[in-house]
Length: 114
Picture 1: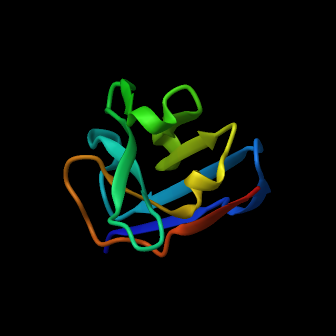
Picture 2: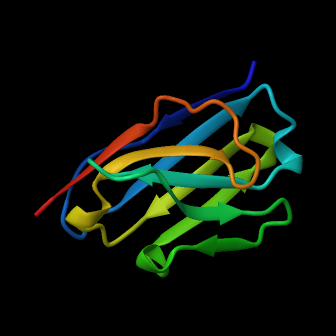
């Protein structure tokens, strides 16, 4: 059974930082590109950062230079370092495959106050 467990979200002030973690189970984690998605209130879920099996990364323009995605294949975990946060980053954050999708986890709420 595939499972993603996201953690690390919370309430942070404008300009603050958070580090999200996502522990994956039930898949051969190391052979899949992984991604972080966010879903803001009233909006569709969107891929914001991806990391390939070899470590290459890509980001949507709105988070470039502020977010860093990384992975630890030994721990089946993908991370998202988020810096210089703004209220526009407020959303529920999920991890999943960057190409192939599995059932979604519960996500972790990130709220940025101004």
